[in-house]
Length: 350
Image (cartoon, rainbow, N blue to C red):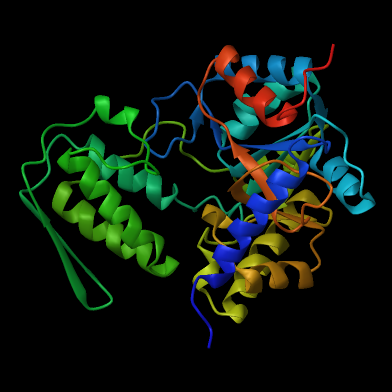
């Protein structure tokens, strides 16, 4: 009998066991996960780091660690000896600010990074559904007393006194417990619903919402890289490009044939823009299972990053590389967090 979720339980237990084995003695690397670098308003998805904080982060990384490319980290994993206190930077999703803001700052510091890009780079690709949903739910001046949508034959309905458009809502993050604020509860419910519906229904659901709420554009800074921009980014020294699926969908619930189609469409488009093979992959939303890992390996990638929080050490799986989610925090908090992860119980180097 197959118990659903047992693979995830084993994965967590294995990670915990590994942590206690290596925490006192083994060299370790960190793979940092960024998304957006922008001066724009914060997002409830927690994906924004302001440029001034990003500059401080790079200063900290240069002073306490050894900046590495993802390829160098993976080569160390395959060779069984990773550089101690190595730090790798990655960016997920492929927002335009990765080119316009992050890349110039990285170039000034001489620090490499890998950008995982979803989609195909087509100029008609809209902003990601979660950014558009955030604008509809939280930025609209007023919401109707009752909202309803039909998804695959089922009607979902919400009602309430929604209150006004947000400013303070920005302090909440979608992964946290939802405070007792009606608009945030609505956003969280719709986020969870859209996360698990087929990608081709996103436009339909957002259209139903916009018809009731009124059209509203996502915040500035949510645009996505186009094909020519991907080419420009890939030609910047130190910047690598990775695959992230065509539709940015959770792969753990898809049948193998659809997983392969999502990955191959994305990789083929990126290779056309970049002009060389795409060797690394990141699981959308950090959601994967053993079948997904198997499919990514069989498709010829050399590595894959998860969203599992943790450090990389010599026994880490190159197709389940843990990462550290980066917050919009200043130098002192960032330094303290990285030192704790890099050093564990070992004394800091003199």
